[in-house]
Length: 272
Image (cartoon, rainbow, N blue to C red; front, side, top):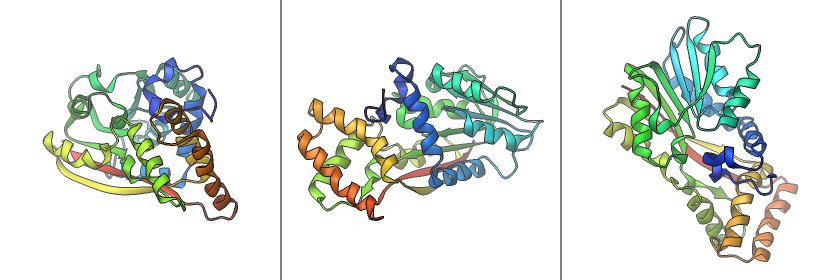
């Protein structure tokens, strides 16, 4: 699988992909964006003002980079467990942690039915996880179940219909945005976070919007595979020639330093 054919809507099937390295590379590129540093920061703050010595769970840890950041915050007296549905991601996370003294470990888990005991963690974090879940209610309930009474939950998810692209063809761009959003089974998880966790009985619920600015190279990697596949399958109301033509003004704008695209998500913090 190459950057041209990777599809970010397929993160639940990483282990079945011909080459999982595309997904690993995509996560690295995303985490390098300035907006992602802001997201990691608000999620860490939503876990509590002082997490020294506490036990934290990072659900959907991917390559483990965020979990290692959390491990630095909890210190030697604490512990962090990173979980992911993908064996390939857990293998990569474990590989990147070889020789590290940080109190972090990784294991394969399904967020919809985790093996941890009730109240096993002081804090639970899930970044860009619920948007991939087939059963949102079960996944959200599991995040709450494994959190101790009085513990904190921190969640971030995008709202894919918040995608913005500065392009001269309004009609075509609306079709592109629709197609990209519809590629995600849970395209509205960001806007649903407050309701879902209030319904689960959590208190001190806060929701903060965060907008990530995407350079053209990252934007194309994010949606290029999805759009190409949708055009071939009939999910995008464009010919191959029209899709290719749609990219041209964006490439010109990028050359002139005028490209603009963004995506907005929401960071939730709550207390059990």
